[in-house]
Image (cartoon, rainbow, N blue to C red; front, side):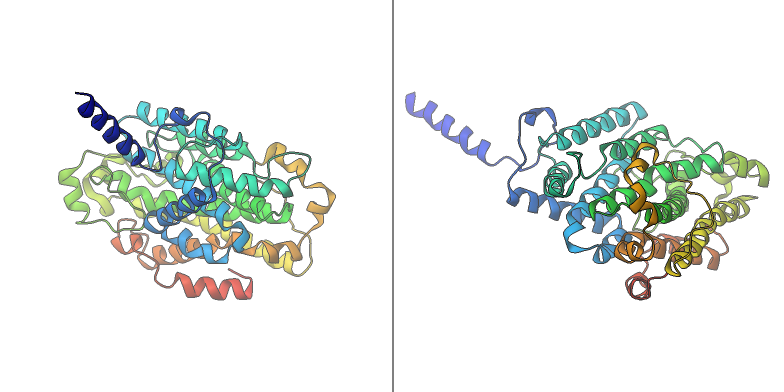
Length: 386
């Protein structure tokens, strides 16, 4: 009997040692400290693989981020993916809200130096520790409020509700995709009003494009847990109609009303719905306008001129950190932080493809990888233009 009990204890001890390195529970590791460098490297690999699988443009553009800031880039972008994918992997908004709260707790724990056994949180905690030597006045090098802002913005549209108007869509893009750029600039670290101004417009354009790209998958959802913004609609929209529950159309309501587009027509007719292409054109034009503005600003800064319009971002209290030096920096700072602005390249390429296909948002080619992004991005970075 004693031998049998000892054997059971030994087997249980061995099984405990074989547990996975990462746990989905925040609270099982509430007293954990910042993990080892080996665990941080594993977390970095996890985040890199996550980008490669679900966000191929961001994975490609990582090459233009300075090496010392890439761990932060991976953590920030992987965090965004984890938050964005919640709506696709839950059955109800209530469950999604619980998962978002889990991530709020994760962020708070990572900033407190006690990350849970979750790879994104582990990598973020190590980034914060590494960047702490460059912070001023004891403040964290990255703004926790910006991570929480992304979660709040995602939660607002967790049920895939339509945007009331174009301004609401722009605000959502500012609070998500532009905020990702602000965080990455902090990680360099660069505190420049000119760069944040550029990032605001590029982020808004990227966010609007992300909503357009995701529209077919939201209107005709594929089976659960099979969503990837890097894959095509397979085996096609028609097959998805017959096998999935009805989804949602997230275009701004004011645009839909202006062109006479009805949600039920999209569900019945897909790409042939009356007014759909006109609505896509109007929304895509707003994204293009932000890129045009950013391009004009970049040229002004490179010529040493002052930007001819006011900053429209929603940075609020963080703007006080610029100081006079941050407000006066222009050409030199743009050169240092240009890699962070590279999403402008992938966004512009996608908008050109959309125009090529006559604003048919259901065209499967629009959801395939951008094969020409690497060399287009290379030349844009070398010439410091987009």
